[in-house]
Length: 156
Image (cartoon, rainbow, N blue to C red; front, top):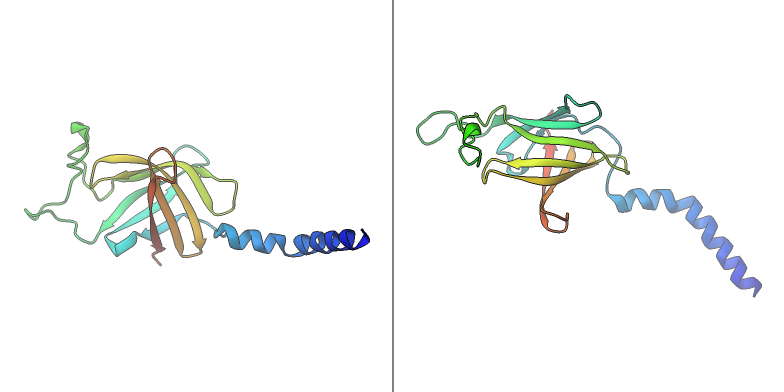
């Protein structure tokens, strides 16, 4: 009987000592800022993440494209947007991320949206800072389980 109490006490002390380190490793996120300029997966564009007009939220816009011109040699526009009034917007300068709020864990931002100019759709989105220069961006429909992740790299 007393052996059970000793084992329980040892487990409790071990969890107190190593639990926080284990939790940080499991979450895969770190504290830090996601504001700044990020290169999207594949290096096709750079996105600047900064504070939105609404306090406490983050937004992002495309500030650079690897291939900024269309087949006619003119700047690319938001031609796939279902709202015809937006189809004349240039891709460079286009709002891409909107209304992210801090999550419960450090380095995690959620409740935001991401716009995909390739299909003209807006998706729910979360962002997780994996380290100071690596950002996991996950767009999804309904539940995060039904989505796609990209790894973005900070541009220095």
